[in-house]
Image (cartoon, rainbow over all chains, first blue to last red; front, side, top):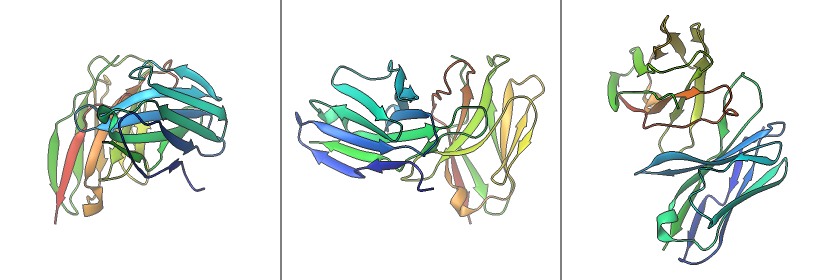
Length: 114
Length: 111
């Protein structure tokens, strides 16, 4: 199993540009989570999906952020337009429903908006 | 949300046991206690979880107080590779497995 795969690993973009982060969860996992990590705020849960359906997006900071999960093997987090304060490491994680085991996190995407 | 309290940092010598404490005095009867760790420049990694009974796995042991208001993650023999931030998190059964990470404990392991 290749684990949770995120791309790109690093992204540098100019303020105002659209940014799309991608995630491939572990096959068979029916929950997918997007987190953002900064020094100031730590790890914040942005949104999570169950069986491709968004369940709770209360952590999404504002309308500039959107997330989709068109199928069980792919999810995107889009920021449009991007701002310097969006600079952070964005993690995707997946989990199989049930009380055994925990999340598996990807390696993250380090986003820098200049 | 039930919250957890952990020391900001701890230090341990290599090859010695490490006991990482966590207080969760407002835990409810159906909250699971989860532990994750995050090594430098990596995503968080699942360590262990439990409800009432003590738990062991290949990575660590979890000791849960009888009243469940506190728990301790035990690394039996710390290695340099165990230097990480350790997070104690309560998972509410009705939260859809969502985990809200706090600040965690930064563990330094010295040779």
